[in-house]
Amino acid sequence: MKAEIIPENSAGIVTTNYYTFAEPPDELLLVSGKKLGPITLAYETYGTLNSDKSNAILILHALSGSAHAAGYHAKKDMYPGWWDNYVGPGKTFDTSHYFIICSNVIGGCSGSTGPSSINPETGKEYGLDFPIVTIQDMVNAQYHLIKFFGIQKLLSVVGGSMGGMQALQWSISYPDMVQSVVAIATAASLSAQGIAFNEVGRQAIMLDPNWNYGDYYNNENPKNGLSLARMIGHITYLSEKLMHEKFGRRLQHSDIFKFHMDLEFEVESYLHHKGNDFVQRFDANSYLYITKAIDYFDLKNDFNGDLANAFVNVNSNYLVISFSSDWLYPTSQSREIVRALRMNSKNVIFTEIQSDKGHDTFLLPHEQLEHNIANFLKREFEKVHRK
Image 1 (cartoon, rainbow, N blue to C red):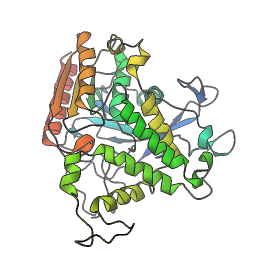
Image 2 (cartoon, rainbow, N blue to C red; image 1 turned 180 degrees about the vertical axis):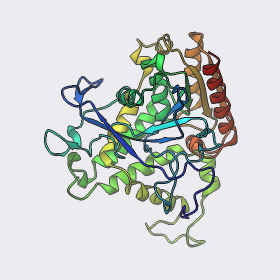
Image 3 (cartoon, rainbow, N blue to C red; image 1 turned 180 degrees about the horizontal axis):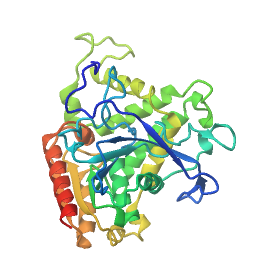
């Protein structure tokens, strides 16, 4: 369905903007010790920044997200932004009151500098010459964007999954710039099982003959490998119950088995559709780099093996949310974050939401999730204006 009539509560027609910084010799120093610059960040904004710049909220996307969090790029867009259910007038992130910023991470492929960008030293795409980036590097790049707006303190930093990792890192790296954090379906480090799924996805890409050690930009893309990686990843985003309810063991076009290797089950067709759709909008090398960044994220390891040490100096208030059916980022990992915060006497609200939809619940309309976030943000805004 085309958005020829924009809904009243939509963020409307939006434009992607670009901010470039870290020009040589002032490149961004990465955690790996390498430098990156110049850097361009693609970003979008929704709502209006108030006079004292106290209503800014930074939304952070997950693995396959982009700066396009809400609204439409044109009246005939097929799809709105990835969090359009939550961002707009009267919605959870009410653009009548808040100024929302969302940027594509470095290493990405939706306008920000990444492996598909042109390396100024060679005049061709970086490919595997692009340096490894971490969640901390992504946050450090976003810091420059926030300073560009002249914002001294963010009302909140918000994200689900990898976005939640960035939100936690923001409060640790820049404690005086973050009033509050909303961390949804996330963890202080990815589990061994999560790393394993990421590695299988990376191998699917790298074993595609068209990958060519990352040098494929002027040739055939490794579509089969990237599609398979997405299929593998997508399975982890859903719960077993949701998969059963949506597909069960239903066949597509027949009531009996055909005894051949073509697609027969509805769930098979669904996964192939997801994989094929993904290759139209995402870069295979970015998939490699971003999943590596997720794997490397480990707040406990960064602070001498004790997660509580990570939150000693934070000054934020926290809302931590998990979903009961999320087996990729299970509730136990959210509770670990909450315990570490409470050991430091930090202000934290924790909610486990009952849901059958798995990890991707945070991307879907959910009344309890909407109310939890909206009420938390309202209280945080009131705290700022009582000072």
